[in-house]
Length: 201
Image (tube, rainbow, N blue to C red; front, side, top):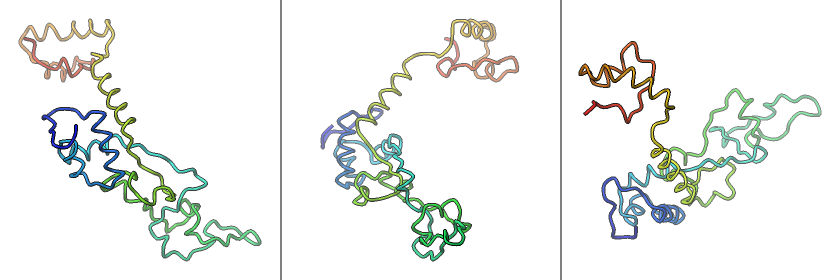
C-alpha cells in the first residue's frame, strides 16, 4: 500500500508492505515514517519486524568478544597457558574470554533490544563480528503465509479422537452445561480445540 492509503483495522500486511518495510530499514527510516508510507500504525511495523526478523550467526572463528568490559580490559592469559605457550594476545581480542574469564559480563550488540531491532541499516553490519538480526520481506511473507495456511487446516484430531470427544462432551452439553466447566472437569482427559470452546447453539 503506497503513501496516503490506510490499512483497515484487522487488515494484514501485504508483500508490497513488507518490501516497503525492508526498504525503509535500509534507508534508516524510523517506524513512524515507514508506517506513514504503508498506511498503518508504527506499532504494527515494530511487531512485524520483531516477529519476522531472523538470526544470522557469525562463524565461530570470526565471533566477537561479547564482554561488556572489553574496552577497558587489560587481562592476558586468562586461558591459563604456561611456559613458552603462554598466551600474549590481550583477552579483549579473544573470544575464549567469553567462556573462561571469571569477570566476563555478557553484553551483545544492543540492536536486539531496541528499535529498529535489526541490522539492515547499520553501517557497521558488513564488518561487525556480532551475530546479526535481519529483516527480509520475502522471508517474512513466506512465514506469514505458512502461519495462515496452518490456521486454516482445521482441527488437528483423528476421527477416533473426535468420536471420543463427542461421547464425553455431548451428554453434558445436553444437560445445559457450557463447554468451559466440562473441559475443566475431572473426567476430561482430551484437549478441546479452541474452535469448539463455545456453547452449543
